[in-house]
Length: 368
Image (tube, rainbow, N blue to C red):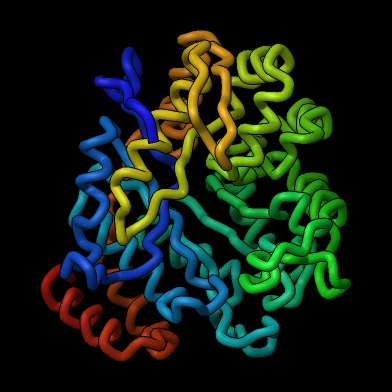
């Protein structure tokens, strides 16, 4: 994978990886559970903080992508003080039905997650395969109450909306097998999802919204610029997709100016996860930093090489640290253990792995 910097993120303070997942709660290969599972990655890569993005309404594979994903992230925060975590919304059935969500509508869930001490909200509902499963447009009224609360309270929301445009146009074997090909008429179009996000912003213009993966707009960043110029709290993260960095590399002068001009709108993340492949995490941190901070030529994504665009030091500090820390209040919130206990009692029937449900009961006795 090539050489790495001897010192991670030189001359930067309080670096935070703002986009990390708990894909499973147990690493069978290493025989360890999740409780301290990302600390080696955090320390090795010189990170002050990490921010977990649970996927409780994921695509049900693995099945632990249910309410338990929120719960284990809350326990991780208790055990590891250098951790932020977002909370995610859950749906008792699919397609989501307001009639079946009485007492657990998204506005109520938002209040519960904030009371527990989550630092923001993660939404995967704009990923096309989950979008179809949930069964509602992103600008649907089913989400309005939650967006009202997020806008009113300044809650940071990290939203995955769309996927790379080629997922609609190039039906490769892998995409078909993973159900990542969206050009068969079953899914909203790439442009339609852009319009729905824009409608959300029109209704909630002060929403503290971060669109993950550069909103898959690296091929046409001018549209993103127009959104930035209209909505003051909008940001994007630069968590790969490799196609994003390949697009950046095609227009180095434009993107050097873009990253410096909009440095206060851009947030660093890797998409690292537990169980941890440490080498991949080190490589991602190194390559993203080098691309922005140096003019070196690097081996990089999808067998491409990239030449760094070398933006300013002040811009780097914003992107790798201060932007997200400002949005999240500067330090991780403390978990309200009584509120977490109530949440587990209310939603534990939606945990589908019995051994995980039993383990959560054990952790509750230990920590709550």
